[in-house]
Length: 244
Image 1 (cartoon, helix red, strand yellow):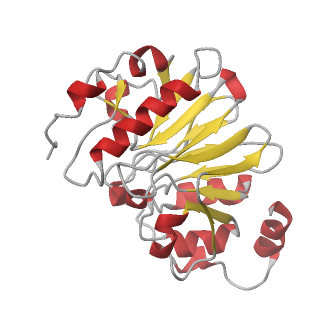
Image 2 (cartoon, helix red, strand yellow; image 1 turned 180 degrees about the vertical axis):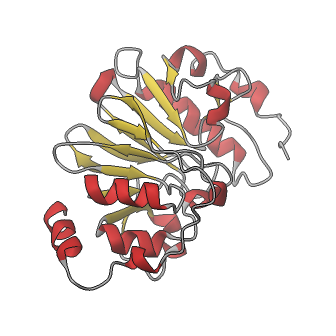
Image 3 (cartoon, one colour; image 1 turned 90 degrees about the vertical axis):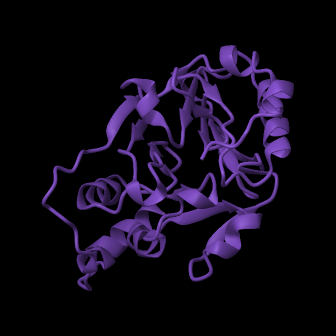
């Protein structure tokens, strides 16, 4: 994919990004490095504060969810290259997926139940799991939305990108949050339990949520997330009212 990207950028034809009107009236923050090979983009207003990430891998870089469609983000992604674009749920698609995908010439990965939401874009759907590299795979965690999914990266003793399946509460602790847009709350809780069964403290050191990152007080990620996830009272949470 990176060679295709280089070829695309060397074309004399105008890039799709040249047709984008980018506001320069406000300060545009650059992506922030959280760990070696991991960058976080500032929250995207278009996706209600969704946080997007970039994993830098030898086999191909992976973009998670949609960063704000700003020149600083577009230039960063074009310079570094993207092979795969993985979406954790439909709410983090944003409105500029088609133009950015065309500019980056990357492969979009989405759980099959939400592939129809991107009808004009070539996508690679998956059902239960999809392997991107020996160190990275995505898996279905339905609940927040029908096709909600997480992505696991083995580096740094394990990093889980949870989208809105698990988000920090006001204390910065990861938990499932029931909102007015939650698709199936009992199913989401069952998949939270599967995450605690799937991983151990030795295989999961960090969690990168897809929203509510302001509650992390500048840390950008949650360390040792299983100490919180494994102590959740899922029976009690099953009766939790939706947050509006």
